[in-house]
Image (cartoon, rainbow, N blue to C red; front, side, top):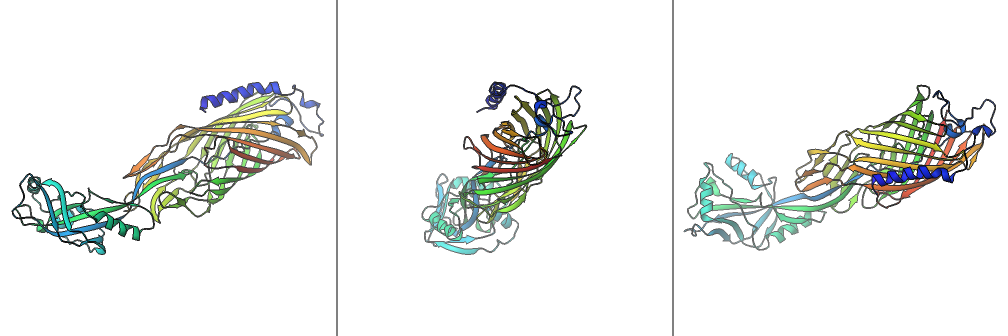
Length: 531
C-alpha cells in the first residue's frame, strides 16, 4: 500500500465518519459541577485558550504503535582465519622449457601448513627487499602431496617480469595447486574454528619468489612458493534497530495528544518476539514524559525519555544464526514543540516539530566472538508533523497525525572484513520515513462529577509506516551493510478509563496487519494526569 493510497483512506474515513455519528448537540446540556466550564467549541471566537472541558480537555491521547526504527542486512563473506602453505626449495629445471611453455615445478612432499602473522606474499616481498627476516611461523599440519609451483605464466613471461625491475624478489603469480592442498587446509580450519566456513585460496595474496633475490631465470634456480588460504564465513544477518539502541524509536502518535496540554504520563509496552537474534525476545519498554503549555495554552513542549529491559544491542553470530544476552538500555530522548494552528467549533489542526537525539547506544555484531561490525548511533532525527482532532457529535471523535522522519546525518560504521580488526568504512544513513496515524474513539460513558470513574472511551487505531528513501549502503571487502524500503501497517485497539476528569488509565493491544514488522503483538498501558 502506497503513502498516497493510505492518505486517501484517511481522508475518506474522516469525511464518512460524520454520517455514522449522532447529531451534534451542545455540551452545555450536560450536568456540570459548580464553577465548571463546559462548551462545545475548542477555542472561543477570539482564539483565546478556552478549552471545551468535554470535547477537548478530556480527549484521550492516541495510543500509537511500536516503531522499531527499521533494520539493515549484513551480507557477504567474512574472513575469520588465514593459513599459509609453504613449498620451498623448488628447483627450476636446467635446461629450462621453451620460452612459450608454462612453468611447473614438482618435488616430493610433504608440505607444511603454517600459522603466521603474515597475510600475503606482498608482505613477504616487503620484508625480503628490506633485508628483514620473516617472522616465525607455527606448523599446524602437513599435506602429503608433492611440493608444487603451478603458474599460468610462461618461461618467457617470467623472465620478462624479473627483468622489469631493478629489485629482487619479484612476485610470480600462482595457480591453485593440484592434489589435496585445499582439503588438508580445510581440515585444519575446521578443527580450529567454531563456525562453519569455506576454505578459499587467496590468489591475489599468494605467489612465489626466487631465493636470494635473484633477478634472472636461466635454469637451476630455487623458488619458494607461498600459498595463502582464507577461511570465509558466509553472512546473511538481520541487524535490527540500527539507530534505536534496541529500545525502538518514538513517533508523535505514540501517546501523543493532538492539542497542547499540561500533563505528565508513564507508558509501559510489552512487545512480543522482537527480532534481535535468531530467537526473538519479549521487549519491555518504559516511557516517562511530560508536556507543558505556554503562550496562553496555544503552544506546548513535550519530552520523552524511553528505556527498556530485555533488549539486545551486542549480537554474536555464526554467520547464519544470531545470539545475544538481554540487557537494559536507555533509548533516544525525544522532544516535541507543538502549536495550535486552526480551530473550529468541533475540530482543530495542530503542527510542530519533533527532535530525536541519539542518546541510545549503537549496535555491534561479533562473529564467533571476534568483532565484525559496529554501528554508532550518531544521527539526530527531525520529525515535522501535523495533528488533527474532529468531533462528530458529543461522543464520537477522530484524531490522527501525519509525520515525517528525517535523519540529519549518517551513523559511523566500523567493519572487520578480513580478520585484521575493525576499521571505519563510512557512514550508514537511516531511511527517511513517513508515519500516517488515524484513530476513532467513542465516549461510551462520560460523567461530570469531580471524583471516581468519569469516562470510558474505547478506541481503534490504524498506523502506517512507509520509507520515502532507502538507507545508504556501506561496503568493506566482501561485506555489505544495506537496507531496503519498508511498508508496515499496524492496528491498535484499546480502552481509556478516566478518573476525576483529569487522570487516565489506557490499556490496549496492537499487532501487525501485514506481518512485515520485526515483532508480533504488543500490549500497552499508559497512566497520565492532566492539570
